[in-house]
Structures are given as C-alpha cells and as structure tokens.
Image (cartoon, rainbow, N blue to C red; front, top):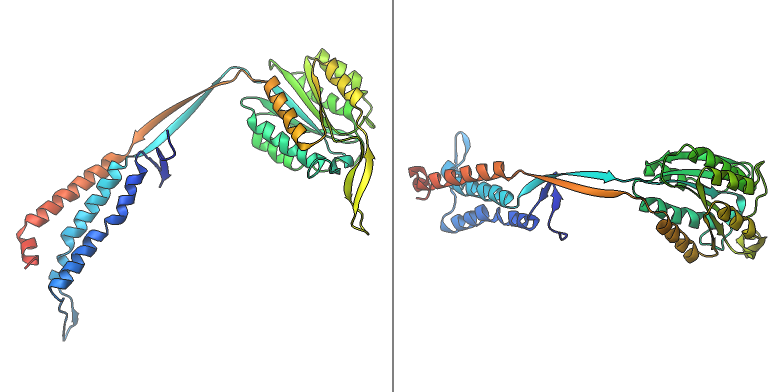
Length: 337
C-alpha cells in the first residue's frame, strides 16, 4: 500500500484521494457560463419608483449550471470512495518485565558522553522503551538513595514522562547506592509472573552509599530469577565537567568506574556487563540488550472498512436528473431566449 492509497480528510479515508483535486474544476462551469452570457448580452438593470429591480430571468439562467456543478461535485466525492476504517490489534504471547535503574548522581553531569552522561543515557533509554512491544517496564532513580518512580507498567507514555524529568540533584542525598537500587528493583520484580525478569542498571561510579551491599543484592536477585544487565558509563581519568566560572575554560575532574564490581554483579545473575565510553558504544549497548531480551509477542492487525459513498452517489444522481429536467423544460427554453 503506497502513500496515496488512503488519505484522511474530513474524518474520512479516501480510496482515491487524487480525484478530489477535480473538485477545484467544478466552479469553473458556472463561471464559464457567466462569461459566455456576458459576451452575448448585457444584463439590464432598471431603476423605478420602487428602487432597484433585479432581472430574475438573468439570474435564473444560471440555475441549471449550479445544479450540474453540485451534481458533479457529489459524484466526484462518491468516486473518490469515502471510507471509515476500524482497526483491531490482537496480541498473543508473553512479554517480559524490565526495570530501568538510572544513576542521577552529580557525576552524571560529566560531559565525556554528549551532551552529558545522563542526557545520553536518557535519550537511548527512551528509544529502548519505544522499541518494546507488550513488555512491562518500570523506572528507578538512584543517587545516595534509590526510589521507584514508575512501577511495572505498559503505559509507556507515563514512563517516558518520568524518564524525561530525571536530572542530577533530583535526589538530595548524593552518592551512588548501587546495592539499594538493585534492592528496589528486586521488590518490584519478585512477584512478577513474566517469563523473564530483567533489571538494567546504568551507573558511572562505584558504590559509595546505601546500606545494602551490591554483591549481596545481586545474589538476592539471582535467587528470585532476576537477571542484571549492568552498564558502566563514561571514561576513567580526567574528563570535562563544565567550565570555569572565571576563565570560561573547560574544567576537568577525575572519575573512575568500579568495573570489577559491575562485572561481578552481572555474572552473579547470569547477565552481562557493558562498558559505554562514548555515545556510539552506549547506542550499541541498548541494541544488544534489545536483541538479548526478546518478547514472545505476536501482533495481528484486523482492518474493517465501511464505505460512505452511497449518499453522495444518490444525491449526485438526483441532481443530475434535476439538471436534465431543467434543460428539457419550457422554463429553460425561455431563459435562453
């Protein structure tokens, strides 16, 4: 089905939308009639005691052409086939449950990923969410504490709205509570009946806050059948972090990812660790996870179409017969005198 197979206009879908362009030619018929009549004779307007006296014969001369124009317009609409379509989607199979846990600590403002680590992660997470079909997703934000912002849901718009609102400083306690974030994900996923339960944890540092040890949290996740995909963001060493307020020159800070622990967390749950040191690598990470965690969702689309051309065709034919009648009457012969 090409681009012009259906076009939506005035609440209808049109099987042949290009035919509607002919409607622009319909008004030319009475206009042409008027121009020809003007060349044959000049309409006389008389002024009497009663004021302006219109020449009704001159006006009625155009009635058949107006009727014909309306008839042609309705017939063109009928031939263009106005329709209304009703689509039904039926999904079968089983989806998976995924919790996204994003680090919103102050270091996520570092600019080795563009424009910042957090902004790059949010953009790719948004694309990941939009690519899922039939899965339930939830959102966790963590820094020195961890909070569940969105429980498992198929309301992707709600999740995307909350994802857009994430920013450094959203959580007052700064730091990186990786173990606590995993614990919150376990609480959301442990009662799930999905065939696969997954937590995607994105962080750029090492565990510096929270009361739950990350490795212990990973072992608990494994006991509940939850798989961890850990994603380490950014580069190690000195990286750009804003500009100096006085000189305006780039400011650099030293940062380090505890890659060993992040890798152990994934291995403890039969998951995988990914390292994303730039935007392209981060994009490849989400693509890889999308391939690894596929749903068994099958979508069937049913489309029923109802035609609405009959009323236009009926009135168009009636006006056509009226035009033929007007052409054949004595009145029309008089008007052409």
